[in-house]
Length: 438
Ligand SMILES: C[S@@+](CC[C@H](N)C(=O)[O-])C[C@H]1O[C@@H](n2cnc3c(N)ncnc32)[C@H](O)[C@@H]1O
Image 1 (cartoon, rainbow, N blue to C red):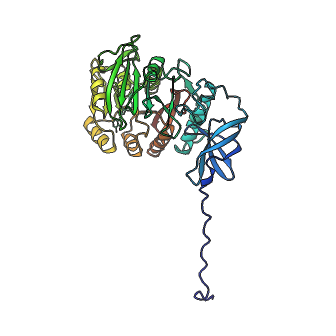
Image 2: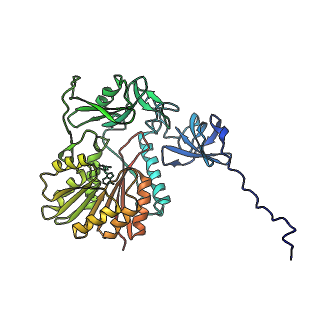
């Protein structure tokens, strides 16, 4: 037997120190661009490291310049020269877009159809990797991202612009606090872009702008801490500021809706109609049913489903924000079957709400913020046994994580639609139908 005391214990070989690649920032090299990834970039590899490349397309041969190198496993880079272009590459319609310029858009260099193919790939990848679904699942395999009416430009009816220390407005550069000065933003509806970008905003940090269905433009100036300091209202076709109008008016799903100036409403002018159509078709509500509309905002989705359940049914809209609840009360005032509950959607609150409801909801609609509902809320909802859960998601990663929670709790993904509600950007809106698994 070996004398262990005499032999110094062999120290386990130290794993090689991860190459933090501190020197890569600013380096230029050629890569062949691999698949698209969530976040508006594609994946390439160089000297054993992953490089997230912006301004490129899968299959292209490009020269990249490394823009950020802070993580051992990967670095970020911009394609600065295209050696072999993909078929979907086009001239950028916006002169402000491109490496090192405005960071507002991700896919200006891609045809509109090509953008939708990229987004479909991202949704499929997130739902397989994070959602645990099989890529061959027909729901995923058949997914196509649907265009909304109006084309890829001038669709944005709400925006937040940044303001430099000199008071000049623009948008931030990608992953930077620097403001890229703009004279126009071609994805923003023209009156909104003009209201913000045609003047200076001394002392402001950001400016929010929204245009309602009547063409009234509301700008809200926020200071450098993000606190709103003043609001200015311009009625359609009028350059003279008017009295604040209170809530903005929106028209969607055949109804008029009031929304708080800073309250949530879909950004794309055609998105509310498209989402209402998809949610209504997937929910298929019947007279007498009970519907839960969680994260209800001003009541858009619950209000659209209420006629379907009729006066013998019930729609309970749950929303945390007091002003949104006040708007929802007004919006749903003519629908006696609809009620608005102010409160946080979390696992505990939801359990209490379900007890108060005193029965299983037939249909649950949820439209959470970007982070998703989370596993705990998803599991409580799956525990209700509702015959249909219609999940509206603006982030396919969050949707993927929550779908995994639902499938782990006895539901399956029965249908999925996706909409290009944010052309030129990497964002995509999904509507998923989850039903109890047999
Ligand atoms: C994506 S919006 C959806 C609004 C609405 N469904 C629509 O289509 O207009 C998300 C809404 O959830 C609300 N919200 C965020 N976190 C919440 C929470 N924990 N509980 C309840 N509502 C929440 C926000 O105030 C916002 O109105």
